[in-house]
Image 1 (cartoon, helix red, strand yellow):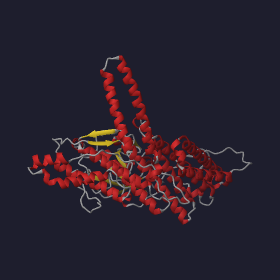
Image 2 (cartoon, helix red, strand yellow; image 1 turned 180 degrees about the horizontal axis):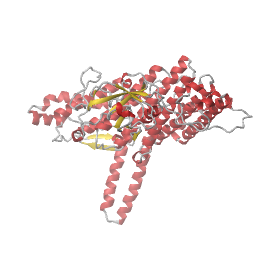
Image 3 (tube, rainbow, N blue to C red; image 1 turned 45 degrees about the vertical axis):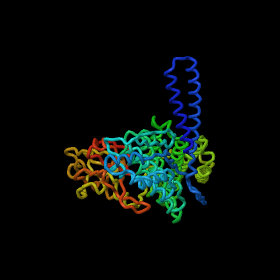
Image 4 (cartoon, one colour; image 1 turned 120 degrees about the vertical axis):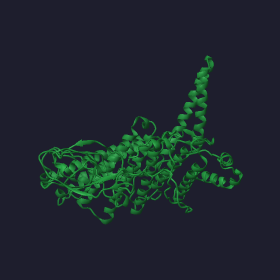
Length: 595
């Protein structure tokens, strides 16, 4: 990677010089010679970028080497940003002499240790030692910024970093660029550690979830606090896409954990299969959001084709799995009617679901429809897999797709009959639902509202009776849903107030619920009405000052670490009541509507 980055830098400098000469000269022969040289340089650049793309798309390099009888689909890791050597010795010694009035040579040993630390963090190992090394240098940059990099003066130190995906070099004299690049590498290293975990065990899945969540947190923090990025991989759209990708891979690990738990416990009940169906639908939807982020104009030509293909394959693969597990439930006749309550999105065409599920023939037809969709989705995933050239050498992904396709096809053959001439039913859309993950940071709700920096009033319980008219309130946002307005004379006026957050409906936790889910629960309340629990913020969240130093793990136990002292203009210009982001609180939709 370093060799390719250096060659790309050389070719781009040659191209810049040739373009300047082409614009400056008026000699026709010189223009023709320069144009020929430019075409050669552009061809060389294209070949180098393709070589770098192949290196970045070679996800098997970062995967686990263990391969048991149950193989898992590969994850997408993020490559590290490369950097050139930088020497702070002379600028820091001069600053010590001029600003502090001391002999700068007395600190030669300390500066040398800092330079050794920077040299070591350029090639961190893919384990906790590598993470501690990056974090240790990241902490030192805080003290370096406070002591030797005043905002009104530039020390003349140039920081050179290469784009993680394209290898295009960027250079800035601001220390914030160095901080942001180190933080980017910290998140990238977490993705590589997560991809290397053995996800055939419960412990490996939990380690992968933890690594991908930490990667999403680091990249999301970088997105919210770093502005004017000189390289595309640290721009807002790219970081937003990467955060969504990490969250999708967390969701995929959650599905694998649920499937592994059912297989280990021998649980083949309809409830377990329905949870798998809804979780698989959730994974497919989250990967679809990643695909949409990758299709944006700025990202379309930037993201490697293998990444886009992998995301498309997983969208189809997990949608197929959701239909397969739904068909498995329909194949079990005893519990199907009870289990399918609130399973489909919206009302399906045809006879009522309850009557259809009591009829064994109709239930078999509906299961057959789900299996037909599963087989079609599996075949589409395999087609997308065959289109990408780099996937042809990826045996793990091919084995996973072939095995699940064969399983759905075998189940379809069991239900298919030669004398069945009735028209095939249309499989309805499956309602996505994420299985709860028993983590302290998730059970308390999104950090945007449920954190130690907010003051909330006590939870209130409000009963919304069932009336002929609407609810008389306006809801907005997701996770949690906000009461944006209460209409006078409506049934909600008795207890709800503008600014309340809905945390549960009839005992069902809604801290992580989406807008449509809460609306559906409220509109489908029974005759007695709905019991809604809400909380209200008494004050806006207090954001942590950039000069305060949170503690962090360190290899040498150095105690307090520091977060970045980010761009002051952005921090001072930001509104004080801006809600801090959280790792998993992504904007899946923020529509406000009156009900």
